[in-house]
Image 1 (tube, rainbow, N blue to C red):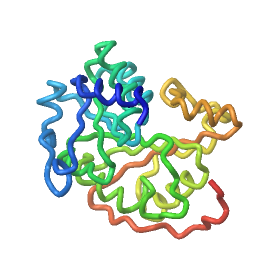
Image 2: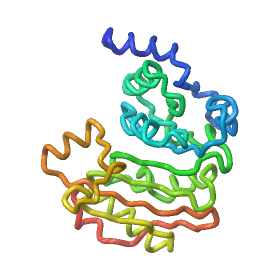
Image 3: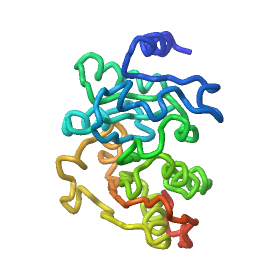
Length: 237
């Protein structure tokens, strides 16, 4: 492991905005912050918005700056990446942003019932060959239902036509409320102040001429979610 990565790991321990639960603190048990984020970290009752797979935290930090009436938490397993976002939040004194280092599979141990109002999923691995690993697949949606408010919004921003269309078919076939679906936010002029926030990876994709898509829908707690039937071979990303 490089010296720079080791330095970042050590500095991560000093950031009050970064939580790094150990495996035994989230595997089959409730993490100490579950149900207590409003009280113990933010000290207010503003809605909490998650960014799952946040990487360096660019979206989390930008959203926090644009929406001071909400709290934002970025979640990722890569500590060296989270360092960038946590350092920015600490250096700039951003009060409504925090980070959690954890696998998304353990997310139900970190957040409690009705604790989260919205979820952003930004540029995840589309997991073309592994259905149940997609972050918008039925197993993941079932996890989200446990802590997302009933009818809470899920936003998906991706460079993957495959994942966009998979999720769109899942929403339609399970009768979830589709709020918006756009298969080229920049080409259509849809990239407003919110959607034009760019992560490092998004800038790379745009430079390669890849279209960026956006989709949002509501997830009802009582919804029964099943895998969609669709022509996955039509999409190679």
